[in-house]
Every structure is written in structure tokens, then in C-alpha cells.
Figure 1 (cartoon, rainbow, N blue to C red):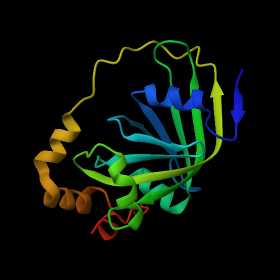
Figure 2 (cartoon, rainbow, N blue to C red):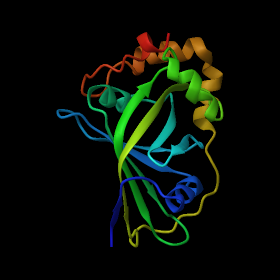
Figure 3 (cartoon, one colour):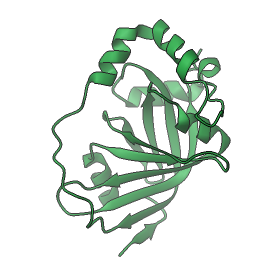
Length: 183
């Protein structure tokens, strides 16, 4: 039932843009596998072979640490209503920080979110779909504003302190370079 594609089709792109949540998986050869749920209208399809997503400040920074050591990334979408489908994007990601020139090109594509700290630019090497028939139905009620409210209340200076205290190392001791690369 699964199918593989070299790039996103228009049908895939429509499906992706309709989703309210996606999941990101990364790991290095020696680290734990990290899987993070993402939302907040933070993903953009930049073409048939490229996506980008805006990462906001959170309790950890595993994805950034992993991608700087090993660019592999898997992004997964699931249909929680309508026709069942799972779509996975496999690719190589780059971490874009505020001090990187690509930040100025990519950041305007997103709704500004308080606590924005990185953009992940993913070159797609494989798109895989599968049936998704075991994925349960869930109803979208709305986005939680808690993280945005928390980051807005902290402000830029307190966020930088938070990065220094909580976001510089992965749980496996891999550096994230967030302080040096975000100015």
C-alpha cells in the first residue's frame, strides 16, 4: 500500500498544507532518537523538493544539535480526519540561525512567532506515503497559545538567558551552538 516518490506532488502539497500538526525525527549515530511534534503554522513548502519550518524556543534543542552533526531528518504528517494517509518526508536539513544570511530570506515566509530561534531548511530525498488506516480520528480545536505567550512575556533578553541555561546542549551532550549563532 505504501508508495515512494522522488519529490512532492501537488496532491502531497495540498495534504501537507491542510495539516495542523507534523512530527520531526532526528538522531546522530550515537544519540537518542528525538521525535518532536510541531504546529503553530510553522511549516512552508518551498517547492517539490524543499520544505522549511520555523522552530521556536522550547525545553530542549535536540533537533538543532542532531542536524548540526548529522543532517538526516524525517518529517511525518498524518490525516486525523477525512481519508486516511501518512506522508513522510526524508531529507537533509540545514539549521539556519538568526545570524545566518539565509535567515533574512526565509524568516519573512513565516508568521512571526515569539521565541523563534532556528529555521530548518530540508532538501527532500524521498517522499513516502502509507495507508494510515490505524491512525485514529482527532478533531482540531485550535492552537495552544501558551508557548507564544510564555516567549512574548520573557522578551528577547530573557529568552537569550534561557537559551544559555537550557538550550546549549542536547540531552546527550551535543552542542547546539544556539548562543553563538543567534547573536
